[in-house]
Length: 178
Ligand code: HEM
Image 1 (cartoon, rainbow, N blue to C red):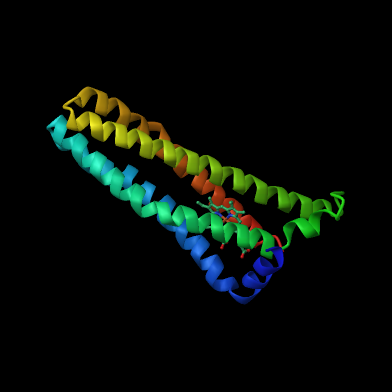
Image 2: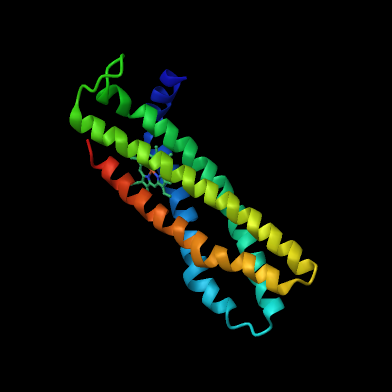
């Protein structure tokens, strides 16, 4: 499997990095557009029910669009992490550090993996909350739906935007590391 990934990355390097970057663009860019463009426009809708219905529908569209890119992002990430040989450059077969700088770079790969995991878990929690809000809207519980959706807009989307920006910065760091 390891050899396959190394060969795959060697043969399709440009395409793999492209799919990684475009996935980050869609995921992070989609959330930025929702938070800073669509949201303020939705807030102008006067009827609370109508407003929440539009927000809920737009969030559902966004989440369904980003989901395949979240998967592509992690697949390309694993291929790159193995294909670029970060571990082999940092530690020997028994796990002893052989190069301090390579170890520092290898740790950045780990930080990116943790960031992806937190972002994916946060996205799953947002999908769960949005679905709950949608059910409440159908039942006519506007206040309950508002409470569920408010947390997504106020904290959960901004958290993923911030983590996404950090991951992109670390990606540029990795790209310039060798
Ligand atoms: C599983 C976790 C991840 C790993 C192991 C990983 C690994 C990498 C590696 C090795 C590179 C350098 C590619 C090269 O030198 O050709 C890179 C670049 C990049 N990564 Fe990630 N990544 C991960 C998650 C993410 C996430 C969550 C985002 C953003 C949402 C992201 C955005 C980027 C971007 C934009 C670049 C391109 C930087 C450039 O071209 O200068 N990555 N990543």
